[in-house]
Image (cartoon, rainbow, N blue to C red):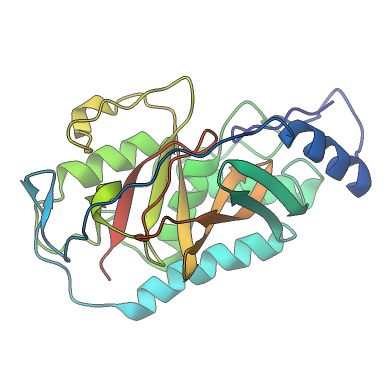
Length: 272
């Protein structure tokens, strides 16, 4: 039986196929024990510059709404390619109203994951390589395919690599992506929201994390694609064995609420 994690696990060598109804029943059973949400954050927003816990943020780049739209469009297209899998969090309670295609369902899906891996120099990996999390490769492919220069977003096989780079360079002028604390900022379409994956832990100081403490961190980031009131829609790769759209609840001030399956610790603001 397949286990369900943000990090992928697949059936290769264990089970030939799982029908849609069977998947749904397994998912319902695996999610039944989830419980309460963490308390919300509640500090006012910063502007397009401001600071990162006292460290200055550089002046923004020239607006490029077409590039921001292209980033979001690439994520939506890949979500559609994988069958539009949907995940909903109500507080900490997770449900999956629509199960899409999974990375090891066949050559079509597996080879698409290989496309993501190629963007970070791993040409031999596919969706059948189930011990290799591909969420950072997915985000890297989105950015590169949309036209984001590599000096603005460093392609990487692990999220911590580009996170550390973006935090380290945040004070430079013209940076497309800059870090924001959860309590300071409400995420918007085009942003990235990031959580650590247990058993990793993030060393925080006043709600911020220093680049040097991220080395080796097991993390996961999703791209914000839409915002409707207190509902945030994000798309990520390697989420429940697929490219999935996740709907999250923001608090009354529009802040991310860390929950057991998504212990958010960082937002990367897209200033395009």
